[in-house]
Image (cartoon, rainbow, N blue to C red):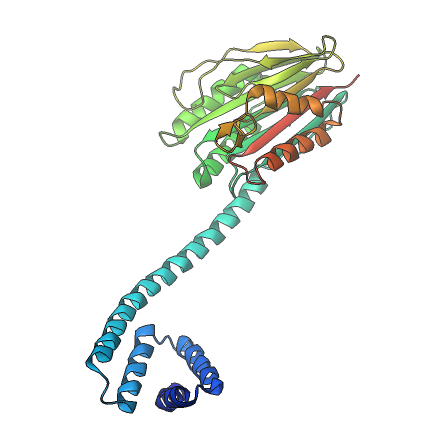
Length: 336
C-alpha cells in the first residue's frame, strides 16, 4: 500500500510532465499506476478524484466551466464504478455457473453412455449431437440374450439440467426392466408411470421404443408422441413413414400404448430420429420431411455409421454449423 501512496503522490508530477511536454514516458508510468491501482482494488472514481485534485493543484484558477465538467465526470465515474462492480460480480457468477454446467454435461455424457452393440445380421449407425452443452435427446440400445435388440430414442420437452436428470432416470429405469417385460408397449407404459410420478409438471417426453426379434426377423414398436421415422423396403425400393400413435410420456399415469410390427427382410432399413433432424431450419424456413428423406437416400448405400455421420454433416453445413436443436439419428439395416 506504501508503494501505491508514493505513486499517487507522483501522479501530479507525471500529469504536469505530460501536459507540458507530451512525454510518452509519463504515459507509460501512468499505465503502471493504473495496473497497480487495479491490484489494490482502487475504484475508477478514486483515480478520477486523484486526477482532479492534481489538476487543481497545478492550475488553481481553472475556469468555472472546466471545474464543473470535472465534477460531472467524477459523478459519472462513481455511477460507472458501481455498475462495473455489479458487472464483475455477475460475470464471476456466470463463469462459475458455466463451469458447473460443463461438469454436469460431462456427467450426463457418462450417465447416458450407451454402447452400439454388434448384432449378427444388422448394420447399426447412431449419432447424437447436442445443440448446446446439455443434450435434450437420448438414445439407448438394449441387447437381449436371444440376439434381439431393443432401441430407444427420446426427446425431452424442455432442456438443460432438468432434462438431463429426466433422461438419466429413464435410462436406469429401462435397464432395470427384466427381459420378459421388454415389449415396446409395456416399456412405454412402465416409463410413463415413472415420468408421471417423478418429473415436475410441464416437463414431458416423447419416446419411441422398438424391439428387433432376431429369430422371427420382425421389428415391433410403440411410440409416445415421438417424431415418426422411416422404413425402407428394399424389395420395393421405397420408403414409408413409421407411423405410430401414442400420448407423450408423463401426461396421464394410466396411458396405454399400441404396439405395431414390421417384418424385416434382407436389405430393409429402419431410420429413427428426433425433431432436431426434421425441423432443421434454413433462415426462417423449416425444411420439409421429404427433403430430409432425400438426404438420407443420398447416403443409403453407405455403411450405417458413415451414413448417419454424413447426414449430420450435411445438415450441420446447411445451418451454418450452428444447430438450432439437438440432432439424433439412428440407422439399422438388415444385411443381405
